[in-house]
Image 1 (cartoon, rainbow, N blue to C red):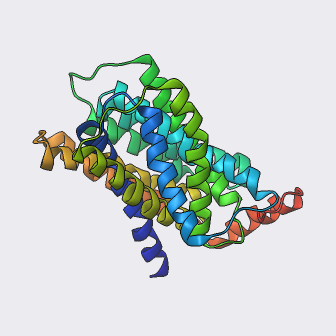
Image 2: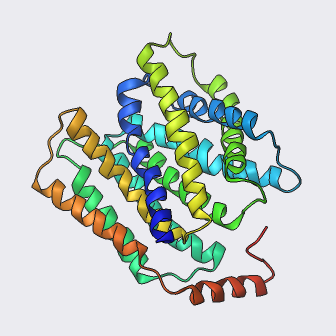
Image 3: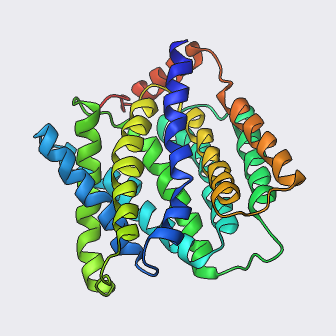
Length: 301
């Protein structure tokens, strides 16, 4: 029952992230990926820092900026580039490769055995999302494709390192550090490489507040919480909920069509998520961690 609760809480994060494409395209000014990413991360991070009132110390300064870059700076910047340059369906497909990348990175970094069920779940999920989101009008953009793949890799590495590095602080403090670090890294890039934002309308402000508070603080606090509790491949497959949410929002809010093949694809995605939750007993995980410790690299910080 405890694990079911953890899975449910974790699933909230990618389900909410599935609304990001709608918010970007419908509520935010077009063509400001760095600025949008910075305004999503930095205000939310500073707000949390005012609440937790605790700075990193020692080795955690470097680790915080590495994870802030992977989980926020690079990932959000590349995500917004892909969202601006690609149709939502194409962007979703490249984003869906993250669970597959996690499987192999977890093997290299955490010594977690590669399970065939995880690989099958990741591949079937990618294929189902391709059917779910692609249309005959979809067009390709090289920079958008590269951004989508790089963003998926950044999120995957950030997920694995978040599991690898667990600081001795509260969950909100850990989230505050990463959001703030990610926003600070984006701040000079936004000022140097992008023009100033136009005067903001109410819908723009609403979009930024939603992305920062709900799509940032709340969802990432849940995400980081359960990365520490669950297997990385289990958490990663829940990311397939994002394109399902995106398609559902498009159908309900934007009046986009939802045909038989899309409904079948949603069922396959849900099956892929279920398959990804099937994991071996705890004994294998303990053995993997002992092997890692014997190699001179304890899983603990």
